[in-house]
Length: 268
Image (cartoon, rainbow, N blue to C red; front, side, top):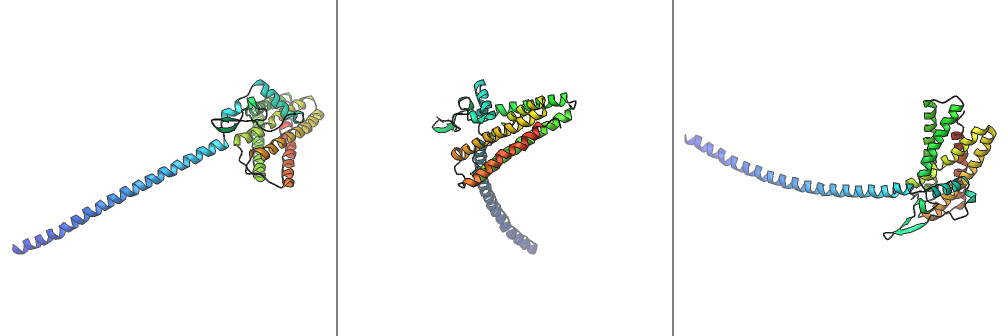
């Protein structure tokens, strides 16, 4: 009996340090876990905070305020269509007008500045293009939902190509720090010229070709004026080599010819 009690006491003595070691390890583990969780939480909040600030700043930088592009009236629309379709008659300057709001310098909305970009005319011109395309398909006996859908696809692709062309030109000649909706508006003005081309195609084929060439010249001049203004006044740095600038701006102007023929030749 003495031997068994001795063995039991030894077992009890050996087991007690093991329990103390476990409790000490658990306390260290809990402390480390709390430290890791607090550090990861702080890092996550910092990362998410900087990420949201980055996203917000880039959205405001590249998309700007959508309401700005719809502040128009009838007088602005009429004058802007004259500038787009007959740019050589625009006797005023091509620079945008600025104003100070809340201590910050910003551009005036389209209703107060004929040189400001808007999205009202591009969207209305795009809708007019689809209506005229459907009408021409109808008088030629070729109207169908598929044919009109093809014109819709062509229009969207043309608008996208125009935006990419202008963006590529800006990034090549400058730092490209221009709101995306500005470039979308400039690319969408193409459909104002396309609507005139489609109307001319109803008259005769010869009139269609003559008006298309004329509108290519006018639209090319308009876009070149816009791009030169942006590169001079609206970007922080621009390409100093004038020859490179002239070649790229000439490319922008020449590209309008195949685009207008592609969208205007609905009857084919």
